[in-house]
Length: 295
Image (cartoon, rainbow, N blue to C red; front, side, top):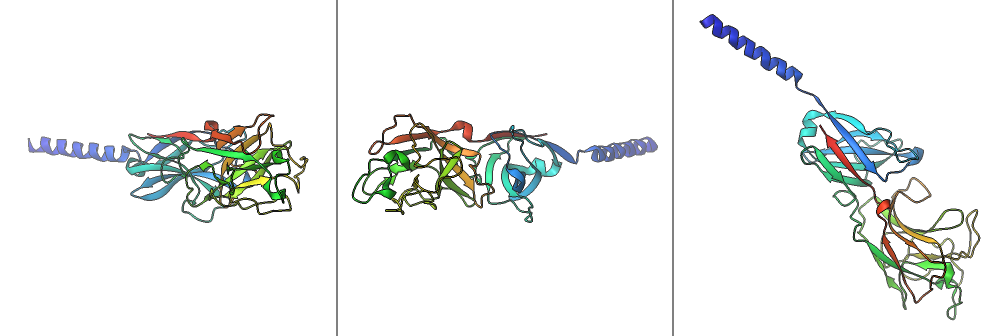
């Protein structure tokens, strides 16, 4: 009888050992994200699991011109996957000499039952834009000396007209690694109105403005008189054009607009100039979202 019990005990230990050996050491992480774009040769995307408060990379990937991820399935440590509380997607430089996540945290999601919905509105991502809004007016203050010159269709300013104009943007305050930028779509493509983080101060650029009062009012905006980009004819009539606010990486990896375009307006061809204002509305298609599944 003792021999039989000993045999059964050894068998049980063998089964436990086999089960330990058969326990999975890796888990599958699958990404499905809409709204990402090709970042070019100088940047890429990287995923991160937050485990015990620390980031662990899940791998890097790029995106094709058609918006398809170069890789959507990744192998991750099963123990880390079981303890992960959050997934974060960052924009990383190429080459990337820093093993830690960059400040440019684009999407995040809280993990529950092996899944997370990804959005810009989950910390530590950059902010929620669902309730964003804005106003702007057409006016050309940088070429005025003794009053309105009657050519206000050549300038766009993000705010409410007045003396002085006041801010008209309702947007999240951006964390480190991001800035806002205004754009108008010209004949040859997007033309910047300048980068900014404050809504009640001048932006970083007056590259196209007039010469009489080149500083402009204390809000972001631009007049389009000088230094026309290739393919454009200045002064640029903004009526009938598209006006966009983007969120840009800082530092920026490209001269054109980044994929995150939270506010947009399509001006009619007979758009009124100041004191009339025009509304910027949420551009849902310009805000990426996604899903992560771990099993």
